[in-house]
Every structure is written in structure tokens, then in C-alpha cells.
Image (cartoon, rainbow, N blue to C red; front, side, top):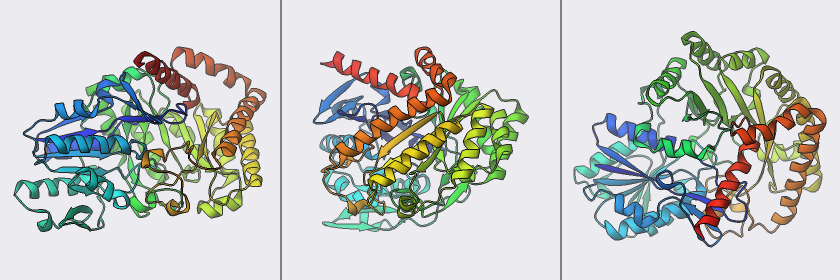
Length: 497
């Protein structure tokens, strides 16, 4: 028996709008499926999903879900290993609490922490491993966990000691010394992996929330990972560390087979694509669309985690995507300043982005543009250029913007350029510990207000449709959904006090 644990949702008390985004743990669902296909019996404890209405406060954080002691009570004492999923850096404190509580009650069961390699909100376990060992974890797994984790568990079952285990991507502490080997090869053929084991997770509790990472407009949804990795090397991002610039895509047939399975087994017709960059291969994108159309699948799909706008090849691809059910695409210009773009290490083709946004608006695909503020070296003039770019994109038809204030992520190139935080869960999109946070946040609020005014000016019908979508709880953008999520979080807090 292998016990898998997803940590609590952690929200920053002074910003319940920007923090507290719900991510369904797709990486853990993949690992569970791989365990079962290898003959292991496993069970999942979802510390958030199993009690989404419970929350408590510690310091500046709101924790939602099961308490650490409740998690421990659910662990099968006959477990051969306990595996925790480091899904999001903001959940780090929850992970540490659960590890400490688990180690106290089950001192003899190996505790393993696996890395989430496919999210920009994750973090490098190589860089943070000491914190896990101090809390009581025995091993970390970096890189893709499916094969490494199974190999490690098999060795532990055969009675191997830590120093006898030689698997790439594994870290541990033995005799007071930390031992770690970098991950080697990635999984070349993603089609060989079994589909995520969603039957082990409390899906109805996630659906009952009525909000998600992507805009949630039906009654049920599931995340999809159609590819892994990203070929770009943005300096603020952890992905170059966890994926080394590699990108691999599943075949169109395999992706749509999963959609068809989820439609049949779970009644799901809405899918939120959580890839780092799903449209790198235009031929594959077109093939996925044609596969959906050819099978006559009645599905809605949304590129919730974003994609590089330049990889959206042309207007014809967008037309085909819309025909196949695509209803939302997030892009990331990051900044309107060419100078800051060079500092970040990210190219951006403005003219192409404006064409794509206009086309999305024309074919009925809602669009989001994400920006980062407060990048090291950014000045007032750079932020003014970002403001000007937001206005141009709004006029072109962008439906919403997201403004994130930079925080250093362990594993990113800029991690050492910041100071002032004292725990990893503070490294979110509203880093109030930054000395310049008040000034940058004031700019962020003013730009959100300007965006809304520009949207009224350029696209009044779209603007006045938003409150209707909010009231109907049929969200076409995240900006419609976020106030609903914040209100529910606030009301839960009032009820728990």
C-alpha cells in the first residue's frame, strides 16, 4: 500500500484575490496511475479537496482543508511508503506541517516528496531539500516522478538502505550528509503513460467550489497535460531548472483519447490545459483539433496556464481551435518594456500578439494577458510602457489581464537577487514582504482600474457581459471568477471565527 498526499491550499490573508488559486493535482494523479499500472495498491489523501469548507489561520496564512492530525489519522499504518506532492511553492508550509505530523506518528515508514515539474508556480526541490529532511522526510524526487518513484519504492521494499539506492533525481540525507544526483533522461514517449487516476480524488468537492485555475463555466472540469516542458529560458521562472529547456508533446490521438475517457467515465466536457506551452508544435495543435472534430466530441477546452503567443502560428490555426471547442487562451507578454524583456530573457512579438488577440476576439475565444511587475531593474518608465501595452491589447480585444508582482522562486536564476522573505510560502504573486511592494501594488491596482475603463471604452458589450457571467457562475474569464472565489474565502473565514 502506497499513501499519496496532496497538501492544503494556502492563502495569503492580506490578498485573497491574487493568492489561493485552486490547482487540481494532475501530477499526483499521473503518479498514482503509474503506481497502479505497476501493480501497487495506492490511496490518496487530498488535504484540501476532502474538506474544502474548513479553514484556519496561522500568522498571515489561511489554510484550507484537513488539519495535519486529520491527514495522519487517514494514513494506513500498513503503508509501505508515504508520498507527498510538492505541487506549489505557496503550499510549502502545509507540506512541512504534514511531514512533521506524519513522522511523529509513523517513524518507520519512508516519507518521499515528489517535485511538480510542470507548473510555473512550483519550485526546485534540489534547492529546498534540506527543509524537507529537517521536517522528517527521507527522500526527495526531482524530475519526472513516474519511473523514478516506482524504482525507489521497489528498492525500499527489497530492503535497500539509502546508501544502496542509486537512482538519478533522488536526494536524501544519510549519516548527517546530504546526497543528491541530478535527474537524467526525461520520459521520451509520453503516450506510454497511463491516464491520470482521477477516480482516486474527490472530484465532486473540487467541482462544488465552482471555481478553478481556469475560468470554470460548466458543472465539471478536469485538467489536461498534453505536453511537458518549455523551450524558453525566462530568468524569473523555475521551468528551465526542472525541464532543462526540453519540450515533448503527446500525440493528438492520445490527448483526445483521454478527453473521450473523461467524458465517458466522469461526465466531463470541460478541460483546462495546464501545459507550460501547449502550442509549440502547430502541426500537433491542428491534429488535436481535427481529432476532436473527427470524433464529433462536444467538449470545451481552455489554455488555462498560458502559452507563448508566437507559437500560435496564424489566424487559420485559431479558427480551427475555436471550431474544435477552444474557448480561452492565456498569453504572457510579461512587460511592455523591451529593456525588461531583455533582462528577463524572453522575446515578444507585439505585432503578432495584436493580430492573434484580434482574431481570438473575432472567433469567440476569450483571452488573457499576463504581466509581471517589479522585475529586478524595472523602473517607472518601464511600468509606463507596460501600461501603454495593456491599452493597445485592450483595444485589440483582450478580455482580461493578470498583474503579478515578482517573487523569487527557488530554482530560478533571480532567486538570489531578493531578500526579506523568511518562508517559502511567502513567495507568491503578492509578495507583501518586498520593501517596494506598496508602490508596485498601487501601480497594479491603478492599472487594473484603467484596464476596466479602457474595456468599457473599446468593448462595452464585453464589459457589461461580465457581471451577468458572475451572477450565473458561468465564468468566461478569470476576472469574473476571482471575486466569487474571494467572497467565498471571506465568508468561510467569517463562519469559522
